[in-house]
Length: 190
Ligand SMILES: [Zn+2]
Image (cartoon, rainbow, N blue to C red):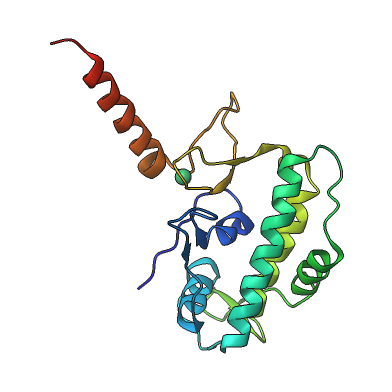
């Protein structure tokens, strides 16, 4: 059972994070094969279990989508005003967004059911649509990068003062706190 990081505030940013420690020596590819892609979609999609099994090409295009979203989000974060992505990135994200998203329905027991012709594509369509919405909305100004050492995770800073620094207090925030504490102890005369 895989457990992927969540809590960025947007599904598209959680998805970008499946390349952990991006660009650092400790970089980890979490979407390495069909099983891990299925696990991500199961965790973030509306299904508890999923019948669909993607092939390796589906995994490759899922990663291509992720990298396109990463570049567009980075543009949105660092440029003020309209985002001008490359034609290729635009095409990749637009195409993913054009697929069917999961469709809700109420069954005879009063329970919510979700359906999609292609569950993997449907959840990735949700991710792509979320990315399009995020980078063109005022919320784009709130995208931050975690200050944790080599973490690189994006999150939306919804804190009132707008000074959130960590992807999560439980991981990066806590590590930094411990480091500061150790540094202070070392400098305290005994
Ligand atoms: Zn972090």
